[in-house]
Image (cartoon, rainbow, N blue to C red; front, side, top):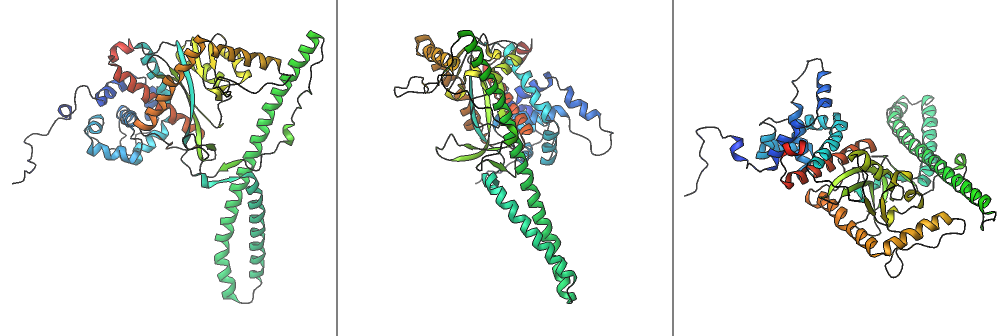
Length: 462
């Protein structure tokens, strides 16, 4: 005899179905303790007409809990408010549809990402952040766009010329149709022309915009390179004046930004123009449409103390900006930091923003696996000095011990985000939105660490 589900005499309480130590209860208690005035302000701007809005505390709870457990799709969150006890508990058994959830996330994305700092402060108050050692790393996080929707600068020139020729042919055909004696033939061509012409003109416009963006990017890069070269030339001249000796080698050539052109292989994606083609770290030799997601992690409890998203595939220019953000977020300068060879840059390690931090940046590897880099040119004495000093530091017992900690501090965090919470690609598009979503991912990582630490919220917030 099979058992059937019996009707309940009294409706069940969701409080009874959810364990006292459940993450959803922690999130429910946490969110009201945060500063949510930015969310409330947007509600107050409404004129009161239309459908009644869901309470912002409830919506923030749903999104934070969803990102904590790897449920980021608005459709999945809506579904969970019907099927999952934890989501039903957080939504007070209300069921905002996926459109409402998605619109709330988009409208309040800046405010949601701003909660990262508040969550970090709670972790600091709970004693989970010590700032003795901070490790930096980056990962290529897949964009919400296919790499097959990208086009190279060289291909853009060819496509632009082809589309212009096709548009010209269509316009000439239209003129011929205007003088055609056969009314039926003219009418048939006229029906077809606007659609064909509009399609090609729209495509041409997109290509021209992408082409112009790549050209502007090349000029900006040349401007930065020009400033860097001029600084090196000035340093070279100063050293020659101080020593009275002419330095060997030729001085570097100053680039002209107005003459800068993108490489033919430079690409732009039409679905998410801000994303870039980057090497796929997980599969050697392959490439993905992606962003470079950066984090700085404190050694004490793997709390993320800084988070950023960059468009550059390499990490060479990220050391000083990331460590500066660490200090801004925590109000404390870390005692030491460790970074892999991708962060090595003589200019970055000499940047005043990292002054006073005991840096441990790998400089490359020689055949014995010891930090190494190719020998610098004779006109780069300052760079050679910085390189040699860092190599010597990493070859000491203390230096090796500190650098060895890097992998255990920062790399597991990416693994937890990717494997445990299934966050492999961004849901949103555009650099501004992606940066905010990454902050949301990182703040929920910190919330999970705070929850698992067993610290009471009252203690953390005190």
